[in-house]
Each structure stands twice: as C-alpha cells, then as structure tokens.
Image 1 (spheres, rainbow, N blue to C red):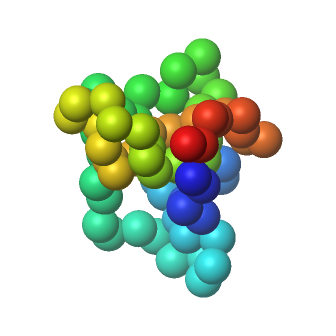
Image 2 (cartoon, rainbow, N blue to C red):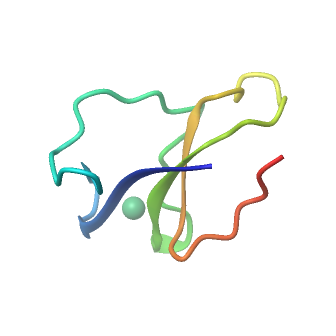
Image 3 (spheres, protein in one colour):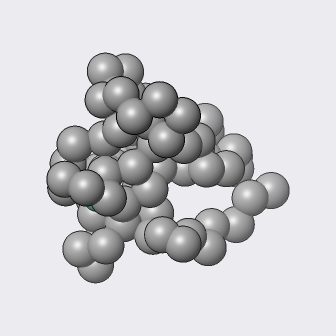
Length: 69
Ligand SMILES: [Ca+2]
C-alpha cells in the first residue's frame, strides 16, 4: 500500500505527495529504508503478517510493484 511519501527529489529526504511537506514522522520497518538497487524512492506500508514488519514502512521502486494483500 503506497502511502504517498517519496524521496524522488533528494535521496533520503522524504516528502508527502499530498502537500509537498517534508515528513517528520516515520514508521520504518527493520533495515528500512534501504534504497535497494539505488532506486527505491517511494514508501509503502506493509500489510502482510511477516513478524516485525506488520504495518511498518518500506521503500519501494517507482512505479512500484509491491504485492498488497
Ligand atoms: Ca530512496
């Protein structure tokens, strides 16, 4: 589930799509954000049941393909 947050402009600095403001609250899962492959710039919330990740955030590619259950 994409939550409308991205760091497309500046790596590591996340802004909300909705209002362009820089995010001040984060709920990253373990080891996230990892910018895997150097091009994960959008943030999704995990809704799967993997222990330790439930409802936490992870960075994903844009346009992303992330399985949402
Ligand atoms: Ca990134």
